[in-house]
Image (tube, rainbow, N blue to C red; front, side, top):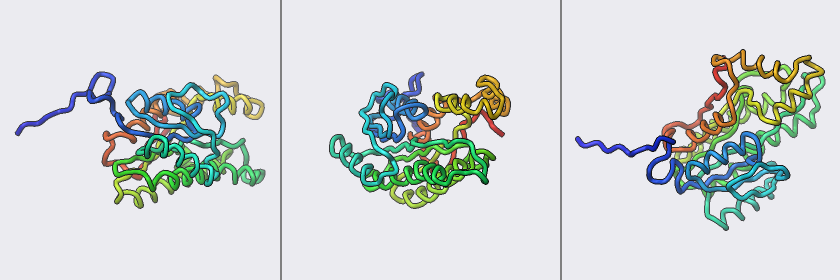
Length: 263
C-alpha cells in the first residue's frame, strides 16, 4: 500500500502555504496582550482576519484591520461582524480573547456592579461573538475561547473572575455539542499566570496588600509549576493555533491548560 505524507517545513508550516492558509479569523480582544500574540501567530501561519477590541488606543501593531466595539453590545457586534463579512467574506475561525480581571475582593466586600461587568465581558461577550458569527460559519470552522486556570479551581480573591471562567467552559461544552453536527469545533485554552502588561500592573497595585514586589510575586507563581517557569503569550498563541488547525481535527469541547504544569 502506498502512503503519501504531506511535507512540513521546519517552521511548522505546510508546504502548500501555511498551516492556516486560506482561513479567515475574527479575534475579539486582539489589540494587545494575549490577544495580540494570537493574531500575530495566526497571521504568521497563513491566516487572514480581523480584530474587534473595545480599546484600540495604544494597540499593538497588527497585520489585520481592527474595529472598535464592546463585545457585550449585541447590536454593535452584529453590525461590526456584518460589515467585515460583507467586505471580505465569512469567517471560519473565531478566537474569543476579550476579557477582564476585576480587582481583588472577598465574598463579603464584592462590588456587584463589578461582578456583573466581569460576567458580562467574559461570558456574555463570548456568547455574543458566537451568535454573531456562527450562522455564517461553514463546516470545518473552529472556535477557541480563552479560559483560565480559574476555569477549574477557585480563588479566594477573585470570586467573580473564577465564576466567569467556569461559565466559559460551560458555554464551550454546550456549543461543542450544538455545533458539532454542523462540523464546527469549539474548545478553550486555560492560561496560567502570564506576565502580560495587564498582570504586571495588577501585581504592582497589590504590592501594598501582599508585601510582595513584582519579581517576588512572579517567582512565587513560577515555583508552583512543574516546569518552574511561567508560560508565555507565545505558548498560549501556539495552543490556540493547535486548536484552530487540522492538527486537532478530532478535538472539541475541551479545555487545554497552558500553565507550565500548575498541578
